[in-house]
Structure formats: structure tokens, C-alpha cells
Amino acid sequence: MIVAAQFSPGTFVDAIHFMGNHAGLLLSKTGEHLELSGVALAIALVLALPLGLWLGHRHRGFLFAASVANVGRALPSLVLIAFGLTVLGIGFWNNTAALVVLAVPPILTNAYFAIDNIDRDVVEAARGMGFTERQILTRVELPLGLPLVVAGIRIAAIFVIATATIAAVAGGGGLGEIIVNQASYGLAGVVAASLCVSALAFLAALLLALVLRAASPRQGPAT
Image (cartoon, rainbow, N blue to C red; front, side, top):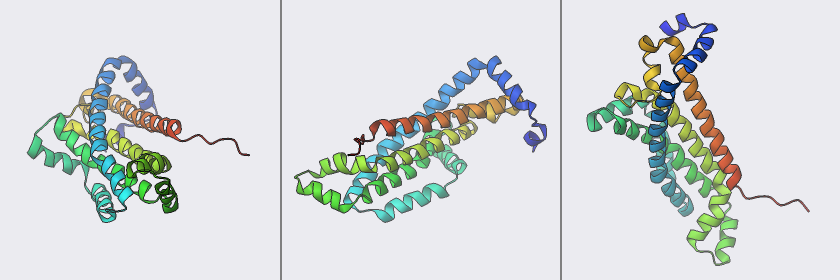
């Protein structure tokens, strides 16, 4: 309510001035934000992506994948962070663990359904050509399912970058320290840090879109 009462169109101008006057602070906090988000996303990828691809290839684990997706949507970020406080204490790894839990569901479920929904005739044709199961997964199923796989990673990345702002309440650092501390940085600082978070999420989505475009098989000219 306090923020809404003070907000005005001129706040954006003040936020731009804050960026110019506190560029060092914003760069430092952005670095912390990227470190926290990047580590959490990397751990989630290592845990969830191979498992989702393997389960999809085996056409098993539908209930498991669906349950993971539902649990991920049901768990509030603050609850995860609060629970982590009792196990890992205040700091980087508590927040990382909470963000990993949020990132795993979209990565795992998208990877599973991307591979599980591949046309069975295509897979059987590859198997008939003598492809091993590993070759079928990496050379046939994964290229065909890549858009959905990358979509899951993109969703997870945006979730993590946006939710990492809450890490400030548990000593996680990042841009959230500015956002939750209006008394010190003013509304202009809050808006400036929020714009930085939005820019990071947009850049992550754009980068993954470029990765998908580069990794997608090229279509030859129609004949």
C-alpha cells in the first residue's frame, strides 16, 4: 500500500536516475543475482533433465512426472525458503535449494513429455536401422523434442530469476536486497532493481530462444 501511494509516472524517471547514480551497486547485486540463479538452474538441469529424458524414452513414469509438476506449482517459494532455514540456515545455499525445487518440475516434465510424445513409428524405424537406444534418444528423439525441452528450461529460468528476489529475506543477496529495502533505497531504487530483474528474465528467454534456433535442424529448400 505504501508503494502504491507513492508511485507516479515520474518514478520511472527517478529509477533511471538511480541506475545512473548507483550503477556500481546495481552491477554488484546483478552479479549476485546471476550467481544464485545460475547455480540453482545448473543443479536443476543436472538433476531433472537426464531423468526426464530417460523416463520419456522408456515411456515410464507418467504419474511421477505429473506429480512433480503439481508439487512444484503447489509449493510457495517463501515456504521453501523458510523450511530451508531450519536445515541449511541463512545464506546462499538455503536459497539455492529452494530455487532448485522450483526449477526441477518444468524441466523434468517438459523433458519427459517432449520425448514420450515422439511418433513411435519414427523411433521404430530408427531401431530397425540398427540404432542403439542411446542413439535413438540423442539422434532422433531429442532433436525432435528439443523445442519442448528448451521451453521447460526457459520457464524454469524465468521462475528462478524472478523468485531469486525473495532470497534477500534469507540472506541470499542479489537485487532483492534493494527491492525489499525501500527505506534505504527509496521507491526509485525498488523500481530500478525490479527493471533489472525483468531485463535478466527477458535476456534469459531470448538467449534460450537463440540456442533453440541454433540447435534446431536446418530445413532444406522445398523441391
